[in-house]
Length: 340
Image 1 (cartoon, helix red, strand yellow):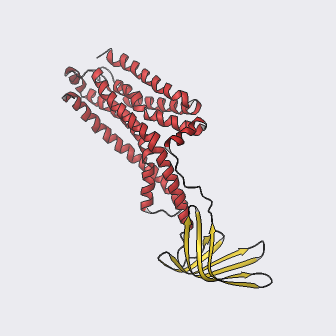
Image 2: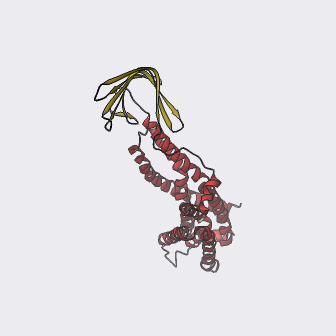
Image 3: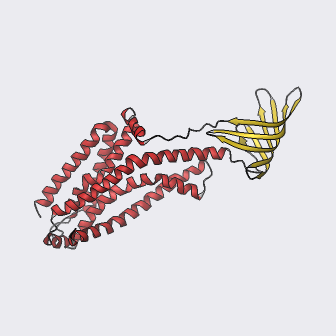
């Protein structure tokens, strides 16, 4: 790569990194607000927030990287045009064809990275995030603390005097059966919480069970007793990437997601010629509204993307990518190649 091309790329990466970190920060703030809603489901520590944020990183990248790349291409060349540096670059053998080849390789690499991120990493991250939430829900159901009232184990109110490692000391359970008009108390010297998949068990040792009825009181002593229940939460499971996307053949929602992910991934490759065409301008003779034009290109592509993904995702995805790339090539030829 010659010095002129390296100069162009250095300007591009400066603009790209500045835009990317700005957009990424703004998107991260929005996602953190979304993550904070988990506090209504269970208690969340700072490390839990960090873990949930990591699972959302692939989505953050697919929302910010494609648009950042396109804007950076247009803004880099427009900045050089305003300072009349594009004329110097053309004089130094950096023709529009060569500029297009440089950005073609960059856009191709970016789109392939986004494709792997969208098709491989996002499904894995979504499943890990769902499993993380369900596990935290399960954990919150068995997080019984000492000397606190109002805690429950299924339909039983629970009170414990103390905790020694993983062992509960002096535990009391109370349950009222309004149908049979009975009240039951269980006391135990010690207890352990056991988990088997999504089934929670509590193993009680050395205690008594009292069953208070209208006609009298039953008392039972025991050396060991086990109570268990299955909370109403989703099963923790992992599905392979191929199996995950194969549902697109029969599931409209999954087909829509697949189409959107692929189309957004190929946004840099399909639109980089638009970016070059908008960026290269003779500012002495024209005053292009580059911000408006950038907005229009992004808006049109994304509107068509959601329309295609909703109506005919499997067929329309490839047609839109090819069609937009052809349109950008025609625009590039008429606006740039015929003039420079």
